Each structure stands twice: as structure tokens, then as C-alpha cells.
Image 1 (cartoon, rainbow, N blue to C red):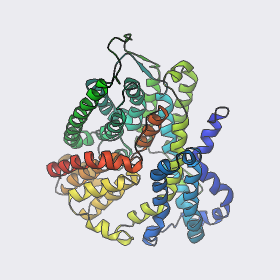
Image 2: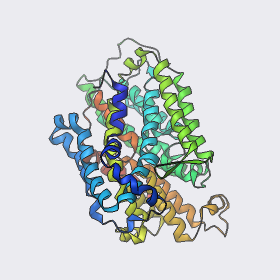
Image 3: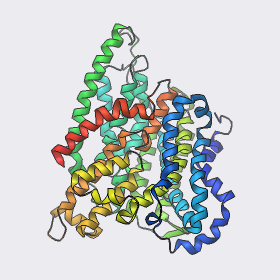
Length: 494
């Protein structure tokens, strides 16, 4: 797909909705400059039914691969654009400049950096080849999941997932039963493993930008991560052992007599580019620079520098990595193209849901917001919404809700988490733990709960693994396995 002009194809498919807006709906720009300075909270006005296009795109992702697989494989980008346009056109008609401002804001501030980061990590990790004659036994699989989990907090869930997914696929290529390995990989490496530093997952990085100390997360969520990981690793090991023995009886596991290939890692210079990406992300959080006005949206120079730097890191990896290494990884652009197209639609249609949530008790979901009272509520409501919405703005919504309920400001946060002083209500610490754990852990509940989930699914399917559908993933795995674990976490900590 797009073999001849693959780079221009990636650029095109990353921004189909933006291109539509800038070419067809340009008249709305005339009002944008006046409206940008006085954008009101549209969340107080939007009814709940405005999230129908968002529900539509989720149902399309869930049902189309089952009902019309050939159509979906060839036209998923058009389906994503359909739902995006279905929301964007009446939204722009009703709110004009305000709507244009909201749309441009979510693409400039959220979607474009999101896709650039994913593209950079996907490209760089695709040049790292972990070789060797390791076999996907229960012990080996458990060790690889553990390594990926520990790695995720330091190179991000996306970075760790992109580095580790191909070795896991290679180790299990001759196994008959391997879907569960990829599912637990999503649980651990793409989600729970990112809970120990702000580098691990975007919600925690947002907390870092809003005065939460960098290493507070490590100390605060370590017990929650250990408990969840130990239970899930035990479940995985038992399940994988049972299935491995069944595969062995059927002769569906590699022979012990196969040629031994020593363990080695090729393309190690790409770790320098990964380190560069991590450094750029940290820089964008620590450096407070001036801003540039783009169509009424204020974009920090530090964020522009970060995104350009990530593109440079990815380009250097493409140029310097020998072609044979990417071929050894079965590297393909399809997974990043699929994510770019689908999330372009998701980010558009998610606007009303996020706006209504941000409106709090003044919005259409006031009952839900007002029902959030104790740490357990914060954990489950933040987590449930993070399973379907972008977990970063969901985290920020309940972060601010907790501050407001306790009458605190962001300036109080370092004191609250460090000393629990009388001026900073110590109850906020428990709320913040619940919000952080919910946003990170429960991203594993669905394929769209966290960005690397869908990418891992796509890479696995490219490797010939028949992954469960959207609802199949939830019914067969996340609900019966994750929800009981999260209930234990609630009972023990919240």
C-alpha cells in the first residue's frame, strides 16, 4: 500500500479531516480571529446527542471488521472521515468561529503532536531488531512482558510497545495459541507499565506540567502497579502454561532441536534516537518559551521545537538504518497509517464529549460529575471514561475537579504531595493517586483506551494473528480479567 509515494501518503492520511476543513470550510476562518479571544464554554450548551458521531466511529471500529472485513480494510479512512464530517459540518454551522477554533485547537495542540510522537517512536523502534532463538514458552513470554512493563515508564508505553512487540511476535510465531500473549502485552506494556513516571503515559505528563513533582508518581503508584502486575502476571503464566501444553500435544510449538541462534540486538544506534525523543518530550515540559499565534491558537515554541526534533529523529533513523533490519522486522507503514486515519476521526468527534465533561456540573453530564465524591469514584469514573475517551484530557478534567472541590490551586500541589501541609488539603493526594491510576491502568480496557493499543493490534494482524474484535477484546479479556483486578486495587487502596 502506497509503496511508490509512501511518505507523501503517510502525510496525506494523517490529516484527512484537516485538509477537508481547510479547503471546504475556510469561510469559517473569517470569524475565528474574533472568536478566539472570547471562546465560551460550549460544553454548557451541547446536548448529549452531539456525541453520536463519536459513538458511530467506535461502533464502526468494533463491528465493521467483523461484518464487512474487506470493505473495512480498504475504506476505513473514508469511514473515519464520514463520521468526522458528520459532526464538523453542523458544528461549524451552529457555532461558526467558535467551532472552528475548537477544531483547530484539538488538531494543533493534540492530534498533530500525538501523530508525530507515534510516527517517531514507530519509525525508530522499527529499526531495532532483537534476534536470537528464544522460544515463546510461558517463562520466556512472562519475562518479555516484565521487561516491557519496566521499560514503559522510562521510554513511554508507545516506545516500549514498539520496541518489544516484534520480539514477542517472533518468539511466538510457531505457537497455535498466541492471541492471549498480544492481549496481555497490551495490558502490561501499552498501559500499566507506563504508570511510574510522567514519561510513561500522557496523563501523567500533563500532571507534571501542572506542578505534580516528577518522581512523586513513582512513589505514589508503585504499590498499585506492583499489585496489579503480580496478579496479572500470575494469571498470564497459568493461562499461557495451559495453552502451551495444549499446543505441545498438537505439535504446534517449535522443536528443541532447531538451530540455536545467539541473542543479539541490531540497530542499537536507534536507542540514541529514542533517547532524543524522550529528551525532547522532557524539554517541552520544562522549557517555558514564548508562543506563536496560529489561526487563533497559541502554540508554544517549545512544542514546535519538540515536534520538529522528533521528525528529525525519525528521519535520521530512516536514513541510517540498513534496509535489511526493517525487513527483518517485517516493517510496514500500514499500522501507523491506520492509526493516523482512525484517530483523525476520533479526535474530531471527541470534541463534544470532552467539552461537556469540562463543563462539569453546568454540562449535560452534570449528574455523572457530581456523583464523583470519594477516591474510589475518581478511580472508576476517570478510568471508565479513559477507556473510550482520550485519557489525557479526562485526567485533566478530574484533576481540576478535585482541586476545585477541595478549594486548592495548582500552586499548592508540590506542598500537598510533599508535606501534606494544613494549607494544602492532604485528601488531594488520595484523589490524585486514584485519578492517575484510573487514567493509566484502565486505558487497557479497550483498543482505543491508549494510543499504542490499536497500533499493537494492527502490527499483530499484519503478522497474521487474528486479533479479537473491539467488543470481543472487552468481553473475552478486559472485562473478565482486568475488571476483577481493578476491584482488588479499589478495595486495597481506595
